[in-house]
Length: 523
Image (cartoon, rainbow, N blue to C red):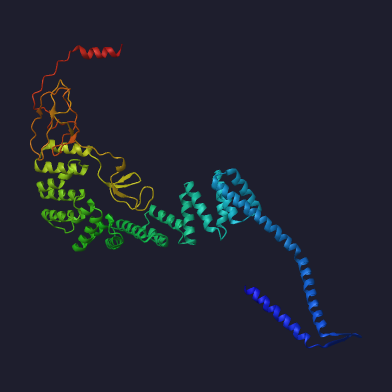
């Protein structure tokens, strides 16, 4: 619209000029080299305009002829570039679709038509990777790394190729070069971070984490930094307690639920006579993740306390996470140290039906300290061997006795406190019995084992009259309260073995029977 208005205004001005000249007629006389030319003003003005147009036309023709070779060359270059662009497009589509033959042909065409083009180099590298040509792929990536616009892309390709051939030195060198060129580059910063963690260079890992801070979420950054600070604190804990304490206190601020950080901070604050702050840190972590390390640090938060005072403190800590097995174990251990066996049994009563190894071992300790009953202790230890596993620090299928900042596969913060392979475990009742109405062999009397809630001397198993097979009714097995375990150690008959019950004498075995069996083997 603006152009139309400008054209109309210009046309009006030209018409006004011609009208102004027409209203003021005049003559023009030109004398030059004996010639005299006379004409009107209007004709002279039109002739001047025609001369200017002719001059412009001649100049355009001469300029076009002068630039014709360049224009022809530009036309062919543009045509070649378009063909190269189409070849690159076909090649990238072929790479995406997995057509190796078409990708290699398109890469050759792109390299011939558009040599040095970044996309052509990328297509060549990807086609070489598809074909398994590692050398060709590295050459293409190295060529890209020498160009400013494709340097990071080339370094990324070289890093991947170095990882594929397990050349960790080359991979680290390429990642460091990329991180120096672009500190905020995610993959390079992560690679440098992983490498620093692999060699336990926690200060370098913290520096690498700072470089990639902009690409991480706030919660993820705080967690990773807390893990690295805890790792550095544990590394210098024996040599520099002040530095260790400063690092672990910062870690607790960043991630209060991190168990290793909270446990170490509680111990160091207790040593510095800051019991209140230590209890606050440990209680906060306990509410989030009850853990035996936290319970141990909380029990020793004030050095020199009696066993009774530690028991009271454990009962207070257990009240922050009621119903959790770690609370029961913490109270049970403290009660055992205080020789409050009733309190210990009450704390563990909810977990003895299906005990974990730690529960069974603690029950064995209670039985030994209270009664000194070796048979019962061995029963509980046998159940500890057969019980389902306790939680432990697990990562990548590996179980560690203590927390580690890096998993065996190189993942930062990879270890978790959980039952190893818990997803494939099957829970079942520890002890199964059958009621007197259950089907039993008609030739032998059925025996019913009765479990009592309180431990004590075990009476011989009662015998029930035989039950006819036609009158027997199957019932669902129900677990007995395993206060007195019914599984036996290999060398202990156990309280329910029936050794104190008069048993019917076994039928005498004919002395010829073993010999007959041996002879049968050679027939």
